[in-house]
Image (cartoon, rainbow, N blue to C red; front, side, top):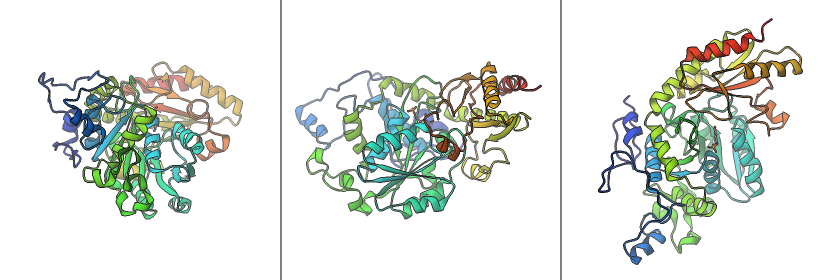
Length: 446
Ligand SMILES: *Cc1c(COP(=O)(O)O)cnc(C)c1O
């Protein structure tokens, strides 16, 4: 493991494995705790009123109140920034809050986003409904069609948005191609890297400008805490077209004549400070200290877990691919996958463990539905849970669960069939998981 992991503004670490355990924390208080403590305090004492005044006016950085920032959370932010090779990060209460904060920092009423139609259902809800109500329009495109991205651009476009590995079909984004198109349009590429994690791919190395995660999934890894994070890679120059980005380049209404880009561009903090002082401050989408601690624990084993998740999932995918009751397996590690080439290019360490398979059809939708039900209810080790990235293996029926809100047309466009079953392969012995699937599928035969 020799990949350099440190971001430009974070401490140097020799490798990813060292950064995932140590980045962002130096024992600095007299107790010298080796592990990052949980700072369970809502407020922070100022040594003097003069100091408080400086911190409130952003002349100096410091802790004010835990809705905005907490020292345990700050270590988590630095560590993920280091692992993604970014300049700075801001942690929030969920993946949804991360997507919302990233978009709201770039776009407001009258603006427009171009997004992959393959996006996670919750993100589609956010973009289409909640942000739509706020006056931000979205155009969905097939992420594999470069012309579609190009055609969708308008003068009001402020961001491109896509996932590195999509959920539930595990298609792989051509990050470089879409980043180039975004930059041609003068906007940043925001990428949701939840399913891959920075261990499998660092989108910033391929041109993405802002990387978000649902930390709820692989970063935490054990299904016990919700959280999200926005990482600013630092590659997008908001100062190059100041009229397009007044939120960064004109005086920030809340802080007198302070201009975020002038004050914070050198430190790579303009976007992050804006998100903290505006959206987290106003909406209260705070990541608790206790959850930050759980994510730091999760990160310490990220590389080992992602290797195991990826290897086991590929073994399960190969088993399913050879099964007569299975029509199609959506796993980019299979050489038959249309995304195999992109997986080889962007995911040489593995393709994570969320993927789907379509049961073979009988031609009768009612019988097909009974067969889907029989397989899912027949599983014993693989649990029916609407979550991914857990140590436990989980199954989900996208058409009636996570993607239930999508219309029939949207489902068809997303290539999710009523016979599509999603798996998130955990850390159990893959032989046991294959036996569980074999048993459940055997009920269909004869
Ligand atoms: C789960 C998920 C989200 C939303 O994250 P929450 O932590 O549940 O809010 C966003 N994107 C992807 C790809 C996800 O899997």
